[in-house]
Image (cartoon, rainbow over all chains, first blue to last red; front, side):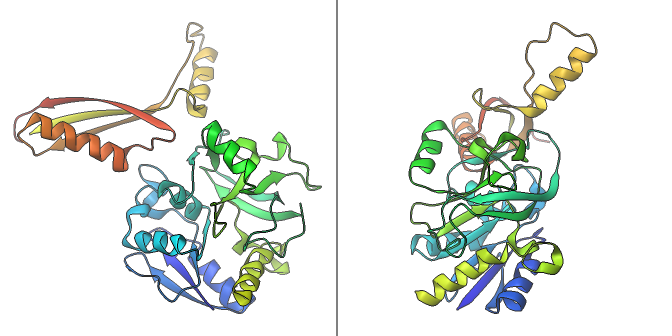
Amino acid sequence: MKFGVVVFPGSNCDHDCHYVLNGVIGVKAEYIWHKETSVDGFDCVVLPGGFSYGDYLRTGSIARFSPVMNAVAKHARKGKLVIGICNGFQILLEAGILPGAMLRNTSLNFVCKDVWVKVENNETPFTSLCGEKEALRIPVAHGEGNYFADTEIIEKLESEHRVVLRYCSENGNVEKSSNPNGSLNNIAGICNERKNVLGLMPHPERCSEKILGSADGKKIFDSIRAFLRGS
Amino acid sequence: MFLAKVYVTLKKSVLDPQGVTVKHALESLDFESVSDVRLGKYMEIKLDVSDEEEAEARLKEMCKKLLINPVIEEYTYDLKRVGDC
């Protein structure tokens, strides 16, 4: 089982992901430089958070043209796992691997804090070890996390149970006051139709050990490991 | 040589939180007649192309591929021939 953490110019959560996978989850993870043209041999590709290409033009809009992204798209088409965290999610949207786009947070502020997210679908490779409708405490850190898509796409995502994570209160209530960025339907994370690609704004790699205040993020990585062990 | 001036704005159906904030700021300065503010991006692109049709086709391709995100944005442009510089 091998994980690949893609490094773009401006990625800054790559080391955290690499550390958590190798040191906490106990799987093998290697870095993949964005100029690589193949991700063969990797079971799960992680697009980490950060500010790829300085967020110039639009978040993720330039990183999506990095050579590695063709390989990531191919990997996803084969049904293999891809997880995009924060800037990684933004890149997946710009690449069209997931639908929709990110807008500036409605507050116009960069939001950096712990939030609660409800697991709306625990039948994905990324959430299978989470309880049904479990609320996880995971930090967010972004200026553009205000998920937007047209009504048709939102309806499709909802009816196909592809909204995997939704901002909620500590006791799991999905309410406007628990939404840190103004995203439609409190969306924090979505997956593709085959459920092998997940994009999420919260940072599970920042809360995978109790000493960091929450180990809820570990459930995401443990779920991936369990899925890969079983496949 | 052509100079393209590209104006990118959020689609009408997309809320523009920056525009709303600027509108409120204008209102607080007693500019009560402001009914709406939308913010956007402005780009100048020089194209080393001699044919106008080709310049326009190239420009549209650039917008489609990279410069705008059609999910949330729309654009207009002015294209005019300029001297070499």
